[in-house]
Length: 219
Image (cartoon, rainbow, N blue to C red):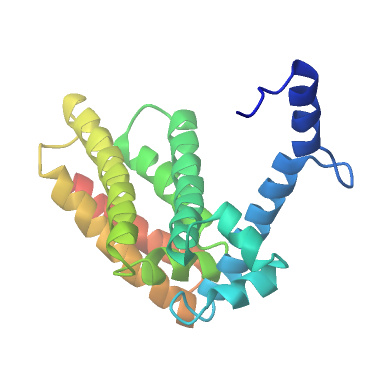
């Protein structure tokens, strides 16, 4: 029967497991590998595409061994989900911050604040646009589930703002879920097309989408 480890042996094993290299412990090195993999995924998925990027190419670009890749992610699908989550959460955080700082009324001013914050976060990098609006669509059932969950978060924000405006007497009641879905669909198509061709400036794109958002929510 194996003897139980003494307290001293346990402490020694713990120290060995968490020993530091180049000033970083195991957890910090893992976080750095994960970040490099996500950066490489943004570059490769956002330019060449998710399906066209094998794991070994991703690892090479990130300077991470295949063995260490599987310490951080179960498969390539998990990388896409994590990357999409990172991009979307950045946009949703920017939107929430803008709404918190915006005047409480009217809804038109709040739409400007929210949509501007969301758009500027997404269109700051064409690779983010491609990952968010193209590469995640239909990639796999798990990816699709994650995409739809974030879509519901956006619809919930639209619905909350719309219903609050109704309660204030600014606009008549309407189907805010429909309005949210229509706005998201337009954002997906228009922003991706803009990222490819950029026939207008970012300011003109933002103004056009704000007009559409106002039409859907306030007209």
